[in-house]
Length: 329
Image (tube, helix red, strand yellow):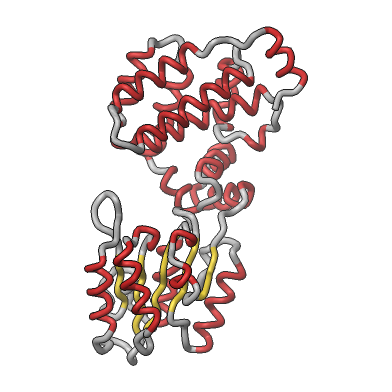
C-alpha cells in the first residue's frame, strides 16, 4: 500500500496495523519536512480507510474525506475553517459505513482562535472520524493538541538512498541524481520538483551569478537577481549552496559533502584567492540578506548591498590566513 514511500518502515507499519485492525485513532499527527510526501501519505491513509477504489480521495472529490488548508500567500488557517469542519464532521457520512477522514494541512499555520477551536473537536471527537494533522513543526502546536494525537513521523532519506531512487526514477546520471538529492536534503518529493525545468533553470542562473561575482559589477548582479523577485528565498538558498561548497572545498572536506557536485570543475577555478574567512563572510552576507527579505524592507537595496559585500569582501590578514591553513575549521 505504501510501497512507493522509501524507508520510514516504522511509520508505515504503525499505520498498516491500524488499518488491518479496521480502526484509526481519532487524531494522527503526521510530522515530516516539506517535500517528504506527507500530503500523499495522508491521502493514502484516507483512501484505504474509506475503501475508496475509484481514487476519489486522490482526485479531491470524496465526500467523506474533508481537507482543510490555509488561505492566501501566508497559508494561515482561520477559525472559520475549523468551525466549518466541526459542523461538517457532525453530519452523517455520505459514501461509507459512517467513517470519515479530515486532513488538516500545515497545522502550524493555525491562528490562536483556530487552534482552540480544533482543541474542542479533539476533546469531544465525533464518532468514526479520524483527523490527520500535517506539520513540519509539531512544537508549534499547543501541547494539549499534540497530547491528543497519535504521533507518526517521517524522516528524510540518506543522500545515497535518494540518489539511487532518483537514478531509477528519472533515468539520469549519478552526478545529476546526487545533486538533486543533496539540494532536496533527502526529501523525495522536493527532489522531483527540483528536477523540473523551471527549478533547474533557476539553479543554473543562480550558479552563473555566483561564478561571475567579481567579473560582473554588483549593480548588474543585483539587477539579475531582482528579475527573480518572486523566487528570492529559493534563489538565495541556491546562491548559498555555491559558497557553502567552496567553503567545504577550501577546508579539505570530502566530495561526498558537496551539493553542487556537478559543478566541481567550476569550483576549482572559483577558489582562486578565496580563504575560509572570505567565504564565511560571503555566506554570512547571504544569510543576513535572506533574513532581511523576510521582513518589510526595500528589496532592491538589500540585493545591492549583498552584491557589494560579495564583490568586496576584504582579504584576510596574512597571519589569519596562516592560521586558516593550519586549522581550517
